Image 1: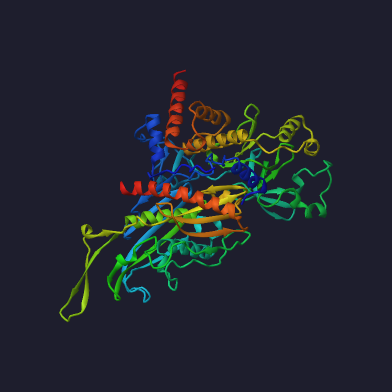
Image 2: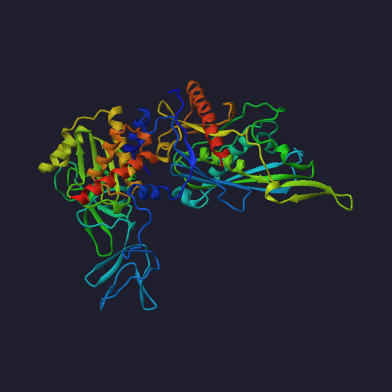
Length: 311
Length: 321
């Protein structure tokens, strides 16, 4: 909770490009990453952005592909808010917000993977963010067209036996502390966890009865890693007064009127957008927000990959 | 506006801060000390025929054992363990900064980040008009016009009752609502009780309120607040001072930068677990200005190391005197 006086001071600070902790409007907080925090998961990462703390774990299981895409594996993202993340998340209050974040991340990682979405399916949902004014999230369909391989993971690499078995990736995120920019933190941690994921090699063999069976090679040396080079990152640009600000803390988020969450890949191309907030945004402002996100996205991507490849 | 900002990604190193402090102070392994105990450590009671067992201790198998981590204190026959990180314990006369949590009955409940919320009674604030009169039902209904839920106030601890409940008062012009500034949270153990908790640094144009409960308020100095503080020293009433004050202009970018640097200096002291008082804050502030450290780089390991070295030098020179 903050008083109106503090919120006004926060807003004046942002408008003068001297935020409460000294950053400029386009600076992000230093990101601290730890890989392999969950021993039982195929890949995991813990990411801290200031006081925001998230853990992402990836588990791979052998399952059946969906009937609409028999030659592809599946991806499922869930985001959970621990009650210790913030007093507002006690009980089941964080469930809706978690589902919305999971939907944004899932559509950025595997846009054609959503059931009934078609190629490059749009994300349209309405929900409420846990703020006093109950805003609604509005979705915009991503700019990629159907038919061509979309951005994100190449799910066809997860296929084992077409139509019968495929790898299913379960990406689970847990938000331990919410100090703003949770979506950005979860997106970056997901990228790190997926890059860290090791999937065992499988071979399809014919057994005595002539049935196709799969043999799993569990040895660590035989595991392969996903190609994450086409994965986009979700970058949030928020509007405070007349300024575009990146990576808001929880206190600054209370001063912002609307936020644009943009999925940007390493080339700076737009892979999906979502708008959230209490008020609408003018077109000129929207373009400026998108351009800011498209400039910062590749920088963050390069820094993250540069770090991950040295581990 | 169109330039992309800084992005840094690095490995998380647990215990990096402690390693930094140890390197700076030249202490590589904490010496085994009988004064610092951990949970389960035995406290020696040699040479004491009878002793009183205080907080943080327990008798296990006829030995006195610590139940918390901290420093062993002995006062006459009382042996107790004082923890290094604990909630704020109010004492009469403390200046505190708190947030109004609730309005109930004839009192505001103020959150001091202590074990309990404290109470600010309606009879303990100055009414507008300055006349001392009996509070009636209308005053009670207009309580929200004074302090709303969520507002920050500075107050003084009037009394601490036997059950631990705390009563506050704002019966002076210098206490009251805090607007247009930044709040920094600091462990209360780092704040020493001093003569003055309100500091107006006119040269820098900053107002600093160091609450004993660990909440520190940093704000740009506004002419009406300066006048109110001056008037309070003379003993005038809050209402008179407010009536004369002009509307303050919004702070300039330079003022905001100074406020931000002060707040970051306090954050640096918190990271390094150093006591927070005006001299130490100014030392860190001036070190940052001398080295031309950017505002956002003040919490980076480079500057933290420089501050630790400065503190080590200060301790060495103090010991040599």
